[in-house]
Length: 330
Image (tube, rainbow, N blue to C red; front, side, top):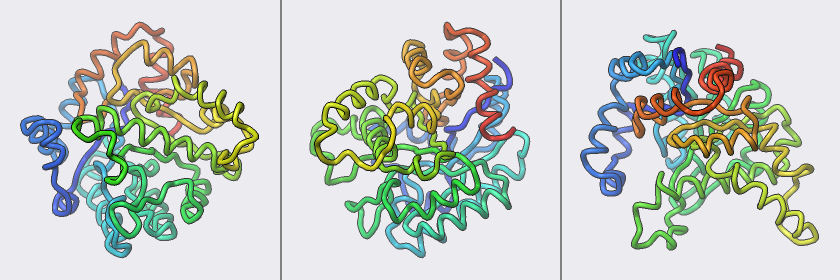
């Protein structure tokens, strides 16, 4: 398929590289793999060449995880987000406006400043929304603020006003919550831990009442919904059975209704047709979008699978382009 749009595609910046290194990921993923990833995260020309080779028209880029979310110093995190968006615009999107767009980096250590920075990136740079790398560290690396919690609702108020989507991207579980992975460090990140962490985070959003207050919000999940298309029916059934118990949150509707009305999912890093068909059966084809997860995954692997997947051509066009074009006003 030609003219595909992808939207979980990562980059880094010189500033980001000065703060973080990929040694932990190298240990888990292998040195050669991460050297290739690190090189591609900065390379604009190779990215566009691979887009051309694989029928990809537009990429919406975002800063690789954990980004601003793990900077505990509030002024430093806020400054980091501003400088990151400036660099993404200057180095990536302004030079390739027909091919590359971006999600804003925001520092939710200060929801008020995050709202201001989001508005600036949308209005000045033409960015298409925000991508948030999971929870935000508040105080230290073992203290998390999740997106459903009350301090963050000031940020959601701005998201609702701007009427733009937010991509909820995974990050590793808190260091104090990794006991189950001891001895199996390969599971902490993208192989398993990402999905468990992010799916639970998304459920928190559903149960919090957030979408009752802001019914126009759209949250995007990668990796075919982080397992939620399969697990939500079970979750909804058990929550109903526990309806006289505690800890049910403030939601006024069923979790499946929020999933259907307030979430989109992408195929990033999950190139499996049976999983795609199950996802479509739960959320509908109009809320599924193609993505690769470059450079952690290959555009060729993603495109070869998707272009030949046993789905109707009408569905392929929707997933591959028109759903994203509608959501992001391309």
